[in-house]
Length: 154
Image 1 (cartoon, helix red, strand yellow):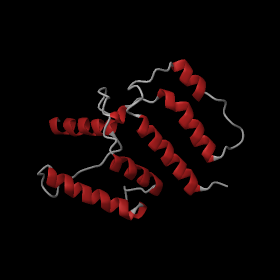
Image 2 (cartoon, one colour):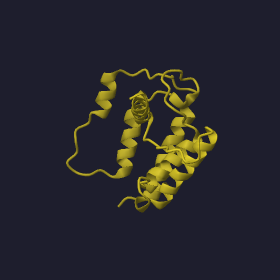
Image 3 (cartoon, one colour):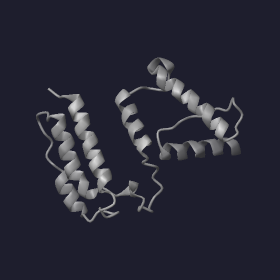
Image 4 (cartoon, one colour):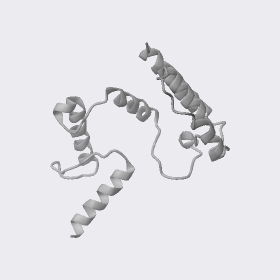
């Protein structure tokens, strides 16, 4: 039986270990695609594994191929900010697993989106009744922006 609290503690330790390694690890990994595939391309299991084992094996297999994006030395793609507060709240909201699309699917998450909309309007000096949608990531943000621009032009 899984001890969820212990699993999350161990996961937090692995995450902290990665963050602690950022100053010493190369910005871009020195591992070949073949080496990564060899460590990650394990046979599909017929029987379930303990979550602790899954997390440990995933961390060990992926570590050599992780880019040091949150290091402050990465100047590649614009990925986003891995700030401590963002990391922690992302983990917490993933744990809560709420649906902000409807109040009935996640009352707190729904109200958070409404409050964020108000903050965005204030920060960008938009009319308070502006319609704002929060999207899942940069790609969906770009698609949404293109759709809005097309609507404006047509």
